[in-house]
Image (cartoon, rainbow, N blue to C red; front, side, top):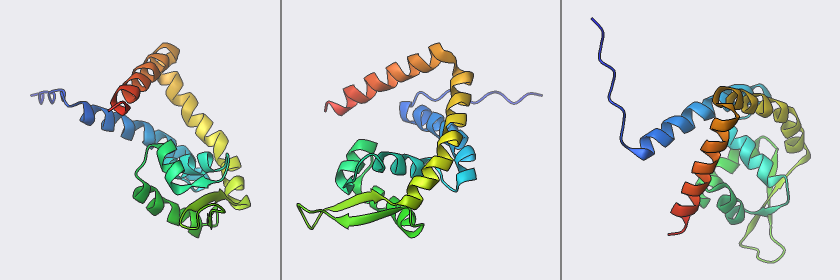
Length: 145
């Protein structure tokens, strides 16, 4: 006798979090070969563009400042980033990617690309474009509060 399928959740948050976990797991599998997870890769990638404050980086990533501060600690310990005092405000900490962090990013980039290409292939160009459009629109509407 077959077990009936679980009913679909009507909860938007549940669906988004489940999709996010599925996508994250794909990236994490690939990035593990460079010693990173997706969150670490994202932080390094964005911080490598230009040194910026923890608060500015948290806003860019869409993360709480205290959560980002906690997530930065292993990157500091690994020698991939440093937190320096700001020239304009000593209370502000600048996130700067060190040469070792740039090297790990170089190793990770093709691994990230492989995961991205796999997701794109599974969803198809039309699916990816539709998903991005819906997500961007939803983020803009929810951010407008």
